[in-house]
Length: 349
Length: 125
Image (cartoon, rainbow over all chains, first blue to last red):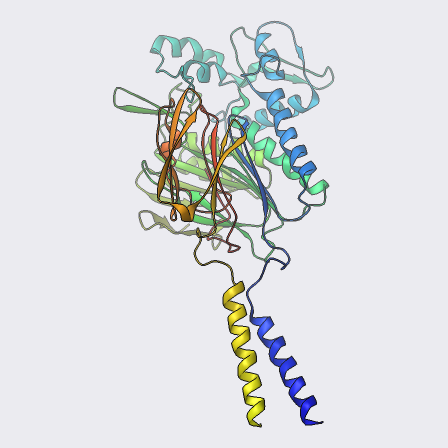
């Protein structure tokens, strides 16, 4: 080999080696997510991040889907299926779209699994407390006593053959606020998958749904929000490639009156905010609607019964934060959850 | 190896080093971030975090939100909305994170990622 050839070869090798060491630049594949945020859906902030197949059309379709679910399920929309069902309480069956009937059946399933700790007919109570709205107040005991008999999921029937549902007693109210956001997460993920998306992470007001893991080949890393009053950020990290993560916590929405704090997760049996010794419950599951309902149920049930409920459901896992800052997880999360905040103590399952 | 070989190698290394420094992504999680402020879904202002610390009084809804922008992150420091959840939310620091005042339809989103993946991809709850 001639001297000049040898030199050129040497330069070429050096250049190649140095290029390989360079950090991933803007042309590297993939470069990061394309993210869109909306603040006018489901009374919360929705953040959609697509790591492939992102387009204006797809983002619009995903947001439109969430808006359509809100239109059908919200108790605050006069024409929604749920509002019509509530308006007809105690009277005849109300014809409802198949999607609303399906979510009602899902809610009844979760109510049965949790022995009523989650109850879609809790609407008479949530309307009284109105926590999270300007009308929020602590109801009188007499008002709660009058509302409690109206919380009864046995009085909600869904008739698939007739395409309708019925609340059998006047004054009853269905409120799907406990799972509608979760269902919207499932639907956006389904639509994105149908559009060819392989890696995505969606945040619907704190409900997280993910698919495909991070494009770098590792699972998604989901921070679990610190539930201590005045706390900021997250207290632990969960790893998950596909599925849903939903938290129910006493810190989310609350009313302060006469020095007391009343949070928004009501116990269907007492009519008061659930007082089970927990600050938050985070549920991991393949289906976001069910994860949403289960997290509410576990929060109401408390640590022992909540853990037992998740243990009975294949694929369901959870992180429970107790009021004394101890953290408990289901055995399936071993190695997938790590504590990052020294203010908490992880109790090994 | 001849003297010219060594010189050329040194020149290539120097050039590569200079290119590395010139083209590498910005240091720090928040260095390249911008706070995009939306009112009722319409972009109201975009402020690079590096231009802070500063406070922006945004006329939102029937009142105002005081948005604090600093290289370390963005928060709503004060607001006359019912509930004050925007203030309670604290500081956001990563691309894609947002702080919202739903009563005032104010939304602040951090955009323009540094390219680095943070410790978490999202926060549940």
